[in-house]
Image 1 (cartoon, rainbow, N blue to C red):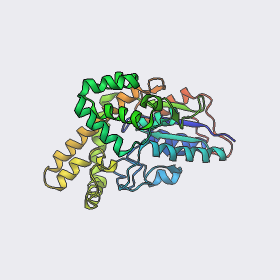
Image 2 (tube, rainbow, N blue to C red):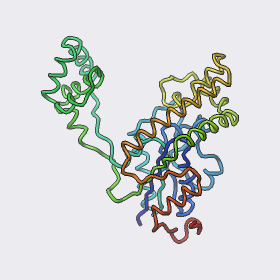
Image 3 (spheres, helix red, strand yellow):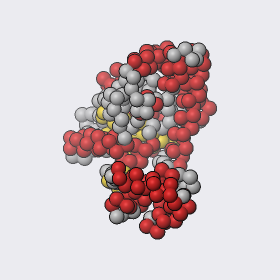
Image 4 (tube, helix red, strand yellow):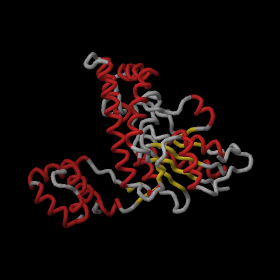
Length: 319
């Protein structure tokens, strides 16, 4: 048996989780989270993770399954997501992938470029040669072996220039050649994608209200527990949107009102970045511009007129 795969992407507070849940219940699907922060179990309130009722209604994968002390990459998520998809596919169970991390969707659809590890010696030599030659001469030398990388790397980006050179020096093959090879993409025609793009001002109002509600619902307690662990602040979970101002309040560096305002502002800025990705990198996906859940569902059905529940699965609600 084969399974159908739906991908639902959207910015924070756009309604993607509710739409995914409704679709999954209709067709008997299971949901895979495509959110770089909801995957961590330590901040369910602050990351607006699916609640107990939703988790009980439909089986979710890669939501609240990883400890905050771990650092998951897009590659690690892709490997785990493909394992779930393959397992569900063998059972003939439909799949709904929903979230707001555009890179995860891109990795799933197109695959990830291979990125070889290089030795510490190669990194040290590249850094020393950059210092000795200067950027212009270093870039000219790189252009001889990897003209594509030399052309696309912006001026002043020492890190990427050195990375491109050290890969060639250590492997004998250009970084651009390595990046041309991708692994893990879904087969063309094997999935359907949609992006939620509601009006920005309405989305901002929803974000502001939701952040304030998060604080009332326990986000401060989550922040306090996470801070008590003394984790490396560079870990992904420690960069959760809105966490920093809550910690500042707990440390006495902000009032609660200031912390909430800062968290709301950080959320709106995050939404802007998500929208840039959705409009640029996912422009070919059909867009639903409604913000009301019922309107979103009707628009989704209009985009999927052949959507029917499989016998023995889901509900009979076709409205």
